[in-house]
Image (cartoon, rainbow, N blue to C red; front, side):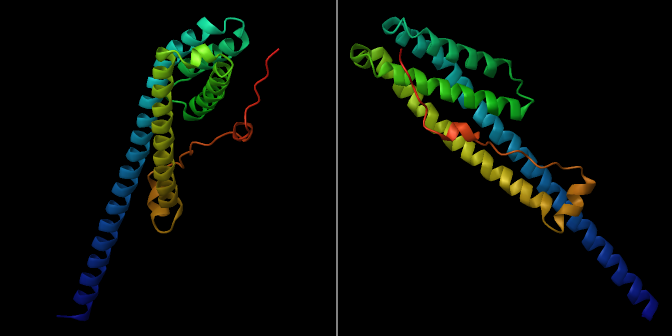
Length: 190
């Protein structure tokens, strides 16, 4: 074997290795991107269940607290914002969901002022369902954020960032709580 042939074989081997690595890196990025989309879809399923449960809970509380119309209007407005927020716009949807969560805290706070409501079995069942859904939503958000972190790391870290640049992969936005949503809600009764 001549030296030229050995160099040619080494160059071809390096090209094949780099090509295989690039294919693997690209496939990994596609896999992670799809996991992010799936994680968001899981959140969406839980949020849909919550949105379906809310009218029943609100109507039950309304029956006992008819004069608390401001709280109910806030929930209705927030639920409408969630339904009108397109599932394609993740940021808009996250903000709408955060508003709905704040409104639901207010509804549950109103219920504290009505002992006969707190003893109503229908209300208690709805409250338990909501509590279970909120736990599932919290878990789904955490899982989503974990997958987003993995994807964003893969996009930003060398050498997969080279493949990410060529493949036009974009950073994903984690599900964040707005600054004012981290505060304890203040419920006031006139």
